Image (tube, rainbow, N blue to C red):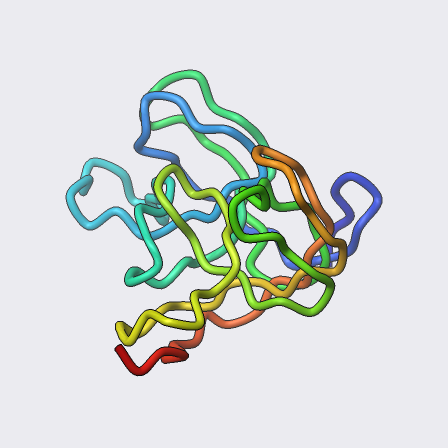
Length: 142
């Protein structure tokens, strides 16, 4: 277990293939970049792709080393404005790796990557989360 920003969790070294990447974003595997021996990740692109963890530091160029938290307590940047996030809500990635509340009307399987430990009613807000899964969930019937 390592401690980052005062919170305990399991962090692993990764290589980020994105040209720039912000910290506290959901990350997914990047199968298109085979230039590195390490686990290569990029910002998650949506709820139908399983997130592997949450980035712990920003990068400024492609193929830079970074750290990703795969389990434990940490921060996640969320968009909680249009659909408010409450404590205990399941969170899934959206474009750019931001966290959003799992949709209750979408019949497409969504991958939960974290549980909110703080509420949010604003966009691009960092909240405390418990990193879980990823596990698929279908909420809607549409």
